[in-house]
Image (tube, rainbow over the protein chains, first blue to last red):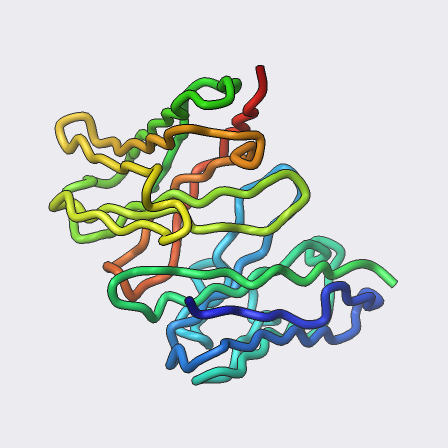
Length: 109
Length: 120
C-alpha cells in the first residue's frame, strides 16, 4: 500500500498570507496526485489533479507542484473561504488501490 | 451537470449488512469512467472502499475486500455498495464519486455523503 503523509497536521495562517501544504508518498506516484478541499458537513471538492492542473472553476490562487514522492499545494493569498481541511490522494496503482493523506487543517491565525 | 446522490438506511445493526445506492444524473454511467465509494469516520480522514468500471469489473481496498461488494445497474444509471458483518468501526459518512477517465484519474464529482451508524 502506498502511504500518503501530509504536513503539517494543522497550519495557522492569516488572511491574505500564503499557505504551503506538503504531501509525501511512500513510493513514486508519478504525477497521479490530486488535492481536495473539505469543509465541515460537505463532500470533498477537487482542487488539483495531475499534481498541478487546476480543476474547473478553481481560482488561480491555488497551485500544485511536485512529482514522484514530494508534492506541494500553495494558496497564494488566503481568503476567508479557504479555511478548511485539505487532503492529497494518489491514484497511481494498477490494480486500483487509492490512498489519501490524513489531511491538513488550515485555520485562521 | 453531473450529480451523484447516495441513499440507504442511516442505521444498521452490528453483524448485519450495510447497503447503499448511488444514483447518477447528468451523465451516463455506461461511459468510460470508474465509479467509487469512499468513507469518512466521524472526525477522521478519507478511506477508499472500492470502485467499479462500467463493464462491471471491480476493485476493492485490500483491508475491506472480504466484506465488500460493489455492483452497477446501467439500466437505472446507478451503482451500489454492500458491506457485510458491520461493526461500530464501520460507522462513517459514505460518499460515492466518479473518476473522470478511468483508474488513473481523480475523483471529480462526489455525492453529498450519507451518514451510516452501526449500533444496536
